[in-house]
Amino acid sequence: MMSQIPYEAIGGEKTLRKLVAAFYSRVAKDPLLSPIFPEDLALTEQKQFMFLTQFLGGEALYSNAYGHPMMRARHMKFQVTPKRAERWLALMKEAMDEIGMEGPARQYMYERLIQVAHHMVNTPDDET
Ligand code: HEM
Image (cartoon, rainbow, N blue to C red; front, side):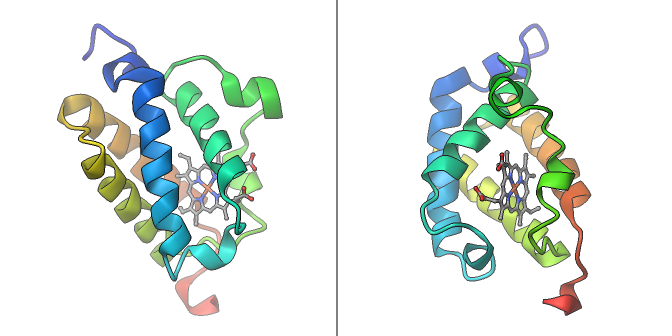
């Protein structure tokens, strides 16, 4: 893996397309997450595909389209609680399992997502 950028190591566009599809179909059904997401998740899924591409060292698709990611700021209008962050990560893990991601590249990606998810928390659990 280390001779490749993480984007290539995980399988590039093909893997990320499958991953975001598997992830947002879970979000849509999740009682803790679905209330804060739009009903139509098509654009959200596309933005996440673009963001994850650049997050893993691929083309800067998200920034080219939407500007600086500023992910924490973009999440401030939603109540991101510790419980929601843990659920987000749990659904991502399930999505990775579903599409058959494995090995060090998956582990590397997941560990970085844990950090970002925790950084996104902006509301205590007892305020929702
Ligand atoms: C957008 C929730 C973590 C990346 C959103 C939206 C919600 C949300 C409600 C708005 C959807 C929309 O209007 O299209 C959460 C929650 C998280 C979380 C509850 C739990 C920690 C993350 C993480 C990442 C991420 C870890 C990155 C790895 C994004 C991106 C968008 C987004 C790229 C689209 C931003 C835009 O509108 O341009 N998230 N998110 N989120 N989230 Fe998260």
